[in-house]
Every structure is written in structure tokens, then in C-alpha cells.
Length: 172
Image (cartoon, rainbow, N blue to C red; front, side, top):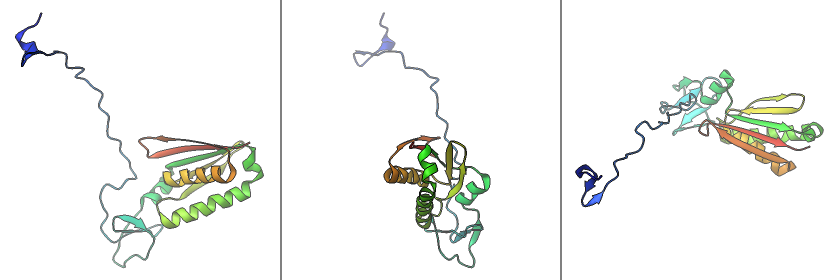
């Protein structure tokens, strides 16, 4: 039966509005993301990176610079990586010296341009090596460099709203 309440402007309107208890996505909190701009000049008390013009860079800090712990040093201090690169397969065991040189060269280049992108640790277990980084970009760049230089298979997934990346490079 159609009631007056269901008719608007000569059209029949469906009364069902859908679920009123929709799932609401919580805003993700990133502990290492700066919540406000730091006063300029600001310098990291540990690595001496300088916050200038809204970003972290390498340079000489002013004498009156505000001192804090930068996000990369905070991650190192907390032991909480943003990037994980697992290297698997027997190929790494046979070529670990040259591959470590490639990894160190890319890290030096990336760190020189972006102070928040650094290696945290390289841990070798029996059947894999795990590289952890302070940023997602360095981890991805390392994985892509291994794939480009040595072929193999590279897979990656982002987690936690693209704040963390996990990569796996395999070559037997």
C-alpha cells in the first residue's frame, strides 16, 4: 500500500534508507608523522639533520636552533621500522658481498637526499636476510635495485595505510 508519506512530487519514494549503523573507519594514528611544523630552525639532537622550509635536510644548524629527536632517529631509538625487506634464496649466500655493497651504496645515496630514509638493521638468519629501514621509500628502492641488478622475484605489500611496507626478494 502506498501512503502519502511515500509519495513526493508525484513519485513513489522508497522508505528504506539503508543501514544507519555503518562501520566508521577510525583515523589511523602515525606516531612518527609530525603533527605540526617545527619552529625554524630545528635540529635533530642525534643526527644533526635540520628542519628547514618544512622538510628535513642535511646542513649546518643555526646556533639558536630548537633541538628535538627527528622521526628517523625516533624510529631507530624505538626499534620500530617502516620498511622490511626479506632476501631469500641461495643466491644471496653466494653473492652477499656484492649485494651488501649495492645495498650500502643505495642507502648512502638515499640518505644523502632524504635524511629520514635510513637503514636500521641487517639481520641474517639461516634461510633469509632481513633488512629494516626507517622509511618505506628506501625499502622499496632497495628491493627494486635487487630485482634490476640480479633479477629474481620481488613482491611487496603495504600495510597500515601505506605507513609500512613489506618486501620479499627471492632468487635461488
